[in-house]
Length: 322
Image 1 (cartoon, rainbow, N blue to C red):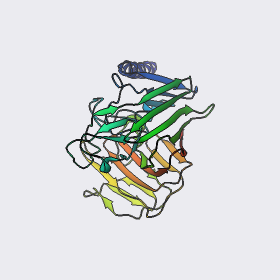
Image 2 (image 1 turned 120 degrees about the vertical axis):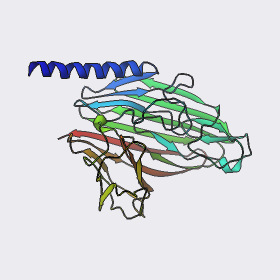
Image 3 (image 1 turned 90 degrees about the vertical axis):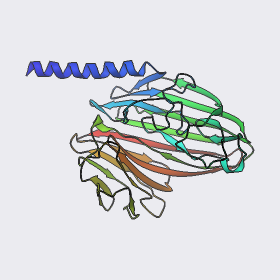
């Protein structure tokens, strides 16, 4: 029994050591409240963990550990900073702004990234890597429990903004708080949508019949990409009839016809570990996507800001182990 205990401790040590060495390749900051510990990647155009053009560069969580269980991490096979989906944690994507109104080679805006170059007059493609013309300015403030990111963009085809995101561990409880403020400092109206992809990887286990997701409303829309009857849907709960295979995924589009309010819960019943996701925003819709190693409720928020207007919203993650 003593030998087994030592072996387990050794494996845990190796896991953390490997994680530290991996994170040292990219700018990273570790935060903790003594209960939860998280590694936060920092935006850097030359050395950053993520340098692609789909997701907001701020608040990328490489690891978040509570009671020995890691809730976020790499869910794909190989990392490349310039691959649009090579990212982890509760990351967000804003819809492109101004793309349809500009000529080829002109700039359009992606919040949290900057001004990107339109090419070949093609339709916008979120999976395409665009050239970053105007990366703006990143200001990052770090303490022991939180990281504050501020992104300033000036005049991308008339659009300017100040975007602030704070990733903070709450004192004394297993809770992560992510707050946002977006202020329109330009001369044009900013109209977009933002969603949180989440990319949960509880315990780094496979997505299978042990994983259950509970939504705030019953699921009423048709199911897409469910040809093999992988999903088991019961009112507002989604489970899985089997493990998702490599290179396979499932998706539910628009779980409800009406705007949605309330919490989302993702749990691995084998580990008896989960997280409740709570927002102060009313969701315009929620999508759901899952693959072999990640499970992703995707709540959407609509944004429309006239010049000098601003909007605030937040997500609270309450972690638990039963």
